[in-house]
Amino acid sequence: MLGYMDKLKQYAGIFGTGLLHQIAPEIVGGIINEFFHQWRVDVDKVIDNVQRNRCIWDELKPEHRRQLNSLAKKVGDLNFITSTMFINSIKKDFPAVASLFLGWPEAMEWLKRQIEELKAQVNNEA
Image (tube, rainbow, N blue to C red; front, side, top):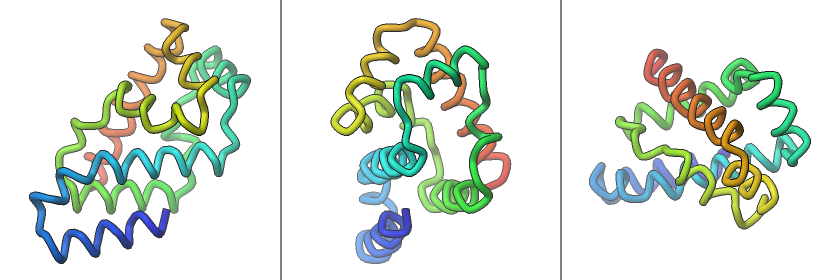
């Protein structure tokens, strides 16, 4: 995560906010992918989270919340974070999880709710 934040700071300083908004989806996609690796996300974990309707924001460590808030302050509008962007960011390293979201409507709805909740929480704290 730290590497992505360093890149963000570097590019923001060199190129300004215009380029930052262009590369933000790639940076956020990398962060999502990194979180999935750290949390060892697999199909069973996603199924459990969907069935229990677990709120991902509640599961985030304070350091991850701070990192997301810091990113939001630098990027501003987080509307580029969508379920499609999310799935595209994990499909290479987590193809079974990406397929689960695409093939199970309840999982896709849960993912959409989680994304909106994360954006709302980050915007409230940013």
